[in-house]
Image (cartoon, rainbow, N blue to C red; front, top):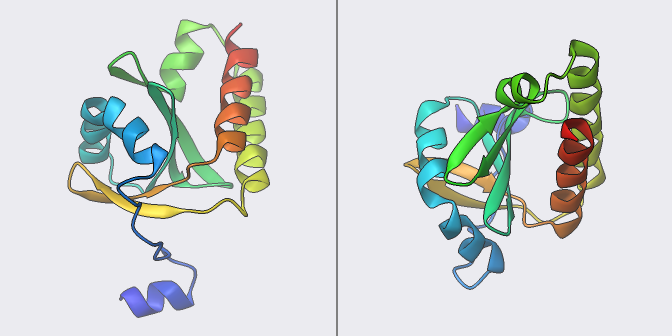
Length: 142
């Protein structure tokens, strides 16, 4: 099935995340909650590591995806963000659209693979994508 997945746009094989990569150290900072998320979710995960946090695209960005935010030893999904900050459906839709565009802006950023919680995930160590996702969440929640 792996061969057919590659032919028809399934998962891509990325090189392993180097041990000495700064993204590896950032992933270690959020290891516990990130492992719980990986074990709980069956959809593909693409992790954007940041300082003491990570943003996780869940599903198939930039079209069909959700977002999880790993911070303060917990995972917040889009629903929690919307509920906590009383965001309307229109505001949530705008945020999802902006996150999809941010993902597309980083399409040339290098990607790596690693294992988290027994699951193969994609790691995108992009300062630009991290900054853009953080700004989108900040704008929507403040």
